Image 1: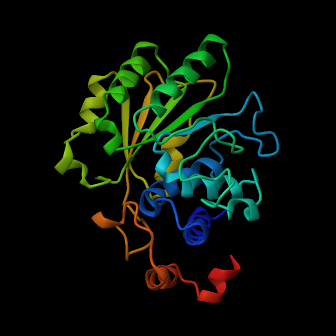
Image 2: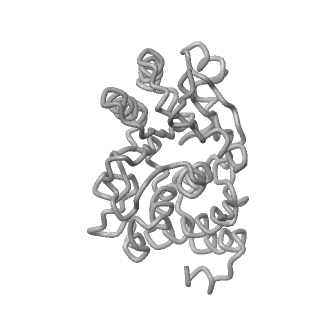
Amino acid sequence: MIDLYEKALDLRRKVIKTCYLGRGGHIPPSLSALDIMTALYFGGILKYDSKNPNWENRDRFILSKGHAALGIYNVLCDAGFFKRENLYTFCKPGTIFGAHPTPNIPGIEAATGALGHGLSFGVGLALSAKMKKQKHLIYVITGDGECQEGAIWEAAMSISEFKLNNLIWIIDHNKWQATGKVSETMEIEPLDEKMKAFGLEPIVINGHDYKQLINALSVDRNNLPEKPRVIIANTHKGKGVPFIEDKREWHSKIPNNDEFKIIINELGLTEEEFEAL
């Protein structure tokens, strides 16, 4: 059985290495959602075939907060969808691995990052699966700042209206957005009560606790929950790197060489070990 905490630590180190090589991306939003994605891909939740990314019976995963691309790229790489030397072309001329994901990357279902649209895309996939009587599930991660978008609430109404209990919506509730705290920009609380009012079943968890993650993300495909499930995962932006954790200025900041050294040290690596990743 894989140790998911150790797996996530290794992935955090690789997220930093990918950013270091490409001098691009968003580190803190990637790290807040990384444990969720690790649980999905390595915790026995998602059905997928990395050698056949378009397998018809695969579960669909949509990263609506596409600025967390550093996270999903490294998860997919370790899951076998592509080689690490290819990923390490991140943000370099001619690469397919840009700062936001696109479907020309194996394992990516949709181009995302224009916030507010990924959940609606997931609604379409879930409705299609229902109409075709298919058993695969759809998992969507949105940010909490993203929940200020009107399209999110249109999608939430659709999930309830069409009884899309084959869609599991996960909110990466790190309480920050690009320019500050979500609560200071436009308050979205109480999220759980709002979800209940929309006819959804909210489950509030610690988004860095794998026992809670696995329990909340696990769904019996032959006995789907009566109400569509939304998981409010309380997380920390930049989780695992105290130097940048929950700090306003780090949303899209690329560390300089001295700052990279601090981050590498906090992740328990020597510079030589980091170079060897």
